[in-house]
Amino acid sequence: MKETSFDQTRWYDRLWAAFIYFTRLPFWRVHQPPRECYRSVVEFWPLTGWLTGSVMAGTLLLASMYLPYAVAVLLAIVARLLVTGAFHEDGLADFFDGFGGGGKDRNRILAIMKDSHIGTYGVLGLVVYELLLAATLFSIGGETGALAILAADPFAKMVTAQLVMMMPYARREDEAKSKTVYRKMDWKAGIGLAIQGLLPMTAFLWFTGLDWQMVIFVPCLAMYFLYLLIWRRLHGYTGDCCGAVCMLVELAVYLVVAACL
Image (tube, rainbow, N blue to C red; front, side, top):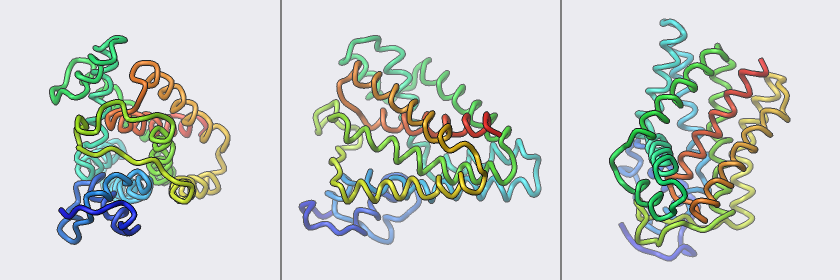
């Protein structure tokens, strides 16, 4: 993969890098962006949520036409796992393992999170998370459930992207598991990020008529408390932290929607 400076990269190279980085679809067979582009993939993270959310919502709607709704929900979850390669789920498991087993020892937390083996906290965290995800999507039901997915996926990624702006990377760059440290965004990238995350959510709230203050505020509050936890324990973020916060913020959206219906 060719090397270049960030100033020489083009926006569509950075967009392409985001789809390669955050999904397991073979975009890399079509185009190989410069390596430097991967430092800015967070700028287009919500847009990848448009794709993964569409796959999940489409699977839910299609499967529900022929199968019981509970089965359709499970198939929708599996479809997203296949498209993303369980990328964020891996981060969630490492997050639970690190913060559950590392206590308040920063170095131990980072070491546990970097370990590729999953521990008790990671297993229990993933099981509880997936059960809550399936249960809330089942309780929302129908087209509203599919629309909630289309809105929550990009919105959660937009909210989580603020971690990159709010704190430094917790490790040295050469210690990053993905060998990539995200760059901080300028104001243009920030506006683009907001549009990507808020547009689907605005359409969802307009269509359903739900209390927008609750649907927006509670997930953002969840992100803030997670930010405080991460800052107090690590004084910086990791890729696993970003994945975990994204998953938990998305779940918070579904929980609020289910409570408001």
